[in-house]
Image 1: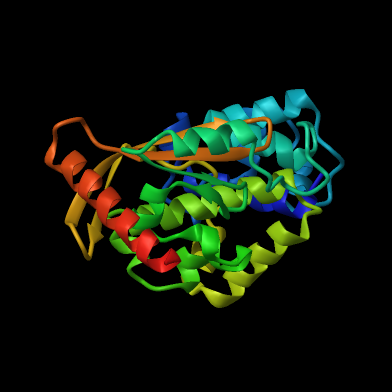
Image 2: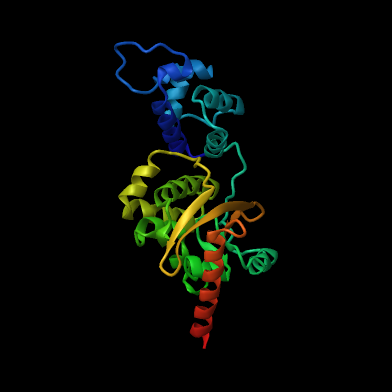
Length: 280
């Protein structure tokens, strides 16, 4: 149980709610923009003293019933409720390190997707494997050191272009939310905690977003790359969870016959020629 993170998360959710959001009157003398602690306690059917101790990180582990009451009182989403349980220590937590080895079947699948850019990311946003089209569209992660193929580090500490994607701001929000969930799942992993600390110290934007305690990002269905060789390419985005290793298979494709599909096909050829020249 991470008492300090649990308290900070509860406080951040409480401060975002307005009295009218939960059916309470808005009085003229309210000094806080969010709910009062005693109001949350009443809605969750617990004592105000106990709730205050939860926010301050001084309370013992709450029961599942208390957590359910808090989730309802604070109007948490399913993802936020799951995160609450992880912080409280009532959900399964991985005490070791996140996995970085990719299943051979997934590696083979990447090679069988010539018209789709595909890559696998770890729970800490390291690109673990990619195919040739990904290398041509973004960069060849296969020749980079582990530190340099981390998308979270690139998003906040690297070049501002971020491969020319149209949703760079949204992606940075997504990175922060996912890393917060990853840190809750792997609290003893020095790679994860070290990455979070590095980003908090090196990026004011990351530090600001981290303090929001968000854990659920909006789904991205398409994104546009501005590529120096073929111009703009709009792709459909699909991310498939590889739950056995806590990894994600990310796929960028375009509808057959579309201009974007033709641009991907051209990029595939140009990329193949570049790889041939590099290896000769």
